Structures are given as C-alpha cells and as structure tokens.
Image (cartoon, rainbow, N blue to C red; front, side):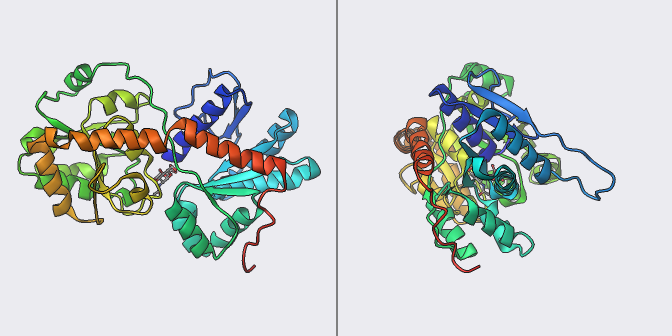
Length: 373
Ligand code: GMT
C-alpha cells in the first residue's frame, strides 16, 4: 500500500501497455495493480511457517520464486524495489541460475538507506545488494547522496524520480464531499500515508488545532495504517469534528478531487509520492523540508515548506489558506504544471527504460567500484 508498491505497480502497468511482458513476484497482489492488464502476470510467493524456524522467512522462498519465474519465462531483467529483502533475494536467485541469470536493477526508496544503512545488522547486506546490482536507481538526488555517504560507495546511482499517472475520478467532488459530511465552504487538507511514526501524525493534528478559523477546515486522512492510537489526541485537542479518517481506498482520485491542498509533516521523506499525487490534482502543498521533498515542491511557488516540528509555521499558512483559498489557487496551478512537466509517466518510464536498455545492452554498472569492502 506504500508509495514503493504503488510506484512499482504503475511502472509495471505502464511497461505492459508499451508491449513489454511484466511479471510481479510478491507475497500478495500489489494494492493498485489491475490484474486484468494485458501482459501482466502475478506470481504469489508461498511462505511456509515451519515450526523448526523461530521466525517465518520470506527472503528464501522469494529467491526461489524469482529463480523459477526467471527460468520459466526467460526473464531479461529483475527490477527489485528495495534492497532488503527484494534485491537480496534476486541476488540469490541469480546465483542459483548461473550464466542464464537475468540482469538486476535495484531501486532504493528510502529506508534501505535511512534506516537499514545505519543498522549494523543490516548495513553490510544492503551494501552488498547495492554493489551486486547491474544498476541502482534512487527516487531523489537526496537519497542518492545519502546512500553514497552512508554506505561509503562510489558506484553510479541514477536518480529516477517517482511519477504518477492520474486517472479520472469516478464520483463528483460534490458527491464525495457530501458522503463525508463536508460543507461546500470547508477547505479540505488531505493527508495520505501509512501513519508510521516518521509521518509525525501528532504534528498534523496539532497544526489543525492551532488554526483559528478551523470551523472552515477539514483534515481528511486516507489512512494506510491504524488511526486508533491518535484518537485520544484528536479528542484532547477538541478537533474530532474537524478530522475525517477514511481507510485505505484504491479510488484515491475521488478523494484527491474532493480536497483542496496537501498537508505533510514527515520527519524524513525520500520523495513523497502522495505529495505528487496531490500536485497532479492542482493542490498547493504544505510540507516539511525533509529529504527529497524540496525536489518535488518549490517553496513559495507550488506550496510552502517548513522545518519538521514547526507547528506555528504550518498553522499560520493553513490559516491564510482557510481564510482566502482563492489567493492560493495559482500555487495549485503551478503545482500541477510542475508535476506534469517533471513527473509524468511518459518522462519517468522513459528514464527507467533507458536504464534497462543500458543494462541489457552491456555489462551494466556492476563493474563500478563499491568502495572499501
Ligand atoms: O514512507 C513510507 O513509510 C512508505 C515508503 C514505501 O515503501 O512506500 O515510502 C518510501 O517510498 C516512496 C516511493 O518511492 C517515497 O515517495 C517515500 O518518500 C518513501 N518514504 C520515506 O522515505 C520515508
């Protein structure tokens, strides 16, 4: 349900539409993958919970599934999203396949570097998977630079930003707002995430509570995680009627279309795919200046950026937007134009295809030194 799964599903579907044969190998069908897409096949990984293992293992059955699918369908390349466990499993699959093994491209989405890269029990294996890939891509320049520094590697890493391909909403803006009990004069701030601690949901709620005219504000949360732990804070802040939480929905367009701006208080974010989804719908964005977000949102042009934890900064701008939403329409228009110019499927899928062709046409980047070990 996270951005990486959405990105991988979109990429696979876009490639399939261009005539490539795409096989998804995973423990479950990706959330936003349309299984009826021609040229797309989903292969589930069977996980056994043998009682001789204290913990269930996913990496080894995944490596066997990757080897089987590669052999049976004569796969040219494996595109692993995340080094751990996917690129590591692909590495094992390649060892099993020998000379017939497909090429390996690894896309880093964030936590491989920002979390695992700092954990001594993971760092060496992530570093190895990065070094053993024929090409490595990162979803922002920020993540590329962090990866090189944290793993002390100097191999090339291509920056291929996230993309989004908007589809038309199924329901009208008015119908969605009415179904959520949102009045016409309310400004709707949308937040879509898995609610992990790094998203700083407490900050999000405090920002809403700080807005003076919050009677005209609604925070709409599309929750890809459990919102229950935040209910007490919502009550304590007295904002229960200002916050509407909807569980994970595949038809995000309906909710994007019904909202007016994006609100993101993350501590760290390598890109922020949900921010981009909002931009495609003409939303001005209020977000933290975290990680790769400034590559997506231009401060003062397509939204406003704040330091993580700057509740007053966020609330001040939100207050202005609630009082006079028309003054911020230009920001949303520029946000959409930027999204279409830089982060369209046409542009970004083309960049991935270039990496694929480079790797299939030659030896890839694997010869590049991984510095040190
Ligand atoms: O942010 C999360 O917790 C989810 C995570 C994921 O695996 O989907 O998101 C990461 O990958 C997305 C797609 O590339 C990026 O847009 C997110 O910024 C990135 N999250 C972090 O870096 C924390």
